[in-house]
Image 1 (cartoon, rainbow, N blue to C red):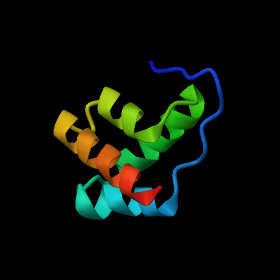
Image 2 (cartoon, rainbow, N blue to C red):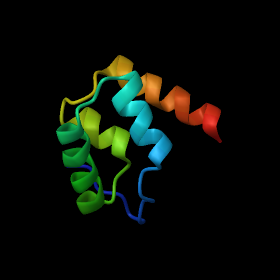
Image 3 (spheres, rainbow, N blue to C red):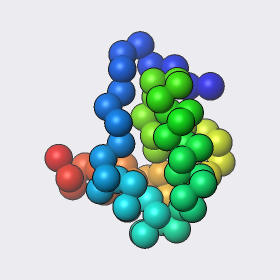
Length: 70
């Protein structure tokens, strides 16, 4: 379980689309990750990785993508 000390924002639509379209994450996996991320107040990509829904390489792709979005 990953727990943050401060609330995390809801994942953006762009992030959700990236996860599904570019990384092939299923809708069910995304929904599970989003529920768990909200429960734990943890970043969605970290939760998906901790549940084994993203590989370490895919997690790095998400983090790299996020860095280009800011």
